[in-house]
Length: 177
Image (cartoon, rainbow, N blue to C red; front, side, top):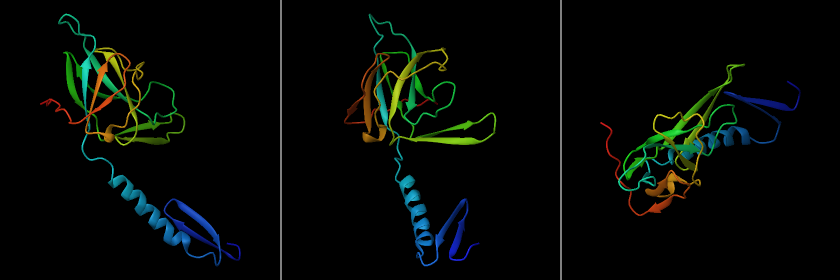
């Protein structure tokens, strides 16, 4: 260690500062960690709901499709887009829950390094639909992005391109028991 420099090491953090520069690292780093912990503690705790109207229905016949949510923080990796399956619509409409959070784990095949991508409902998401039984590998969003936690309930018509709209009261998803 050279004269006049103090090295402070925290788990996975190393910082050097000139002597006499104060104790900012020792005080600020714990405060930053508390701020990050508080930020995640304020994430929404109840899922938002979305009422999906099936726009394929005509003369009593409806096509069935699966509703997918596409988080805005898509990883820059080869392969399909990251999507969350919200549920299947096989009638004129249904109420679905949007999860509070989800995590994608991406592993680099060459190095084995793993990266976690975390989405929470206070971040934007877009929706898309695929026919029942069709792979979601080539699926893409067909709606504008919206922030699920910005309202208790939402309404949209799929599979056409649409913009979700807020509704005053959340719908009630049917139990999958």
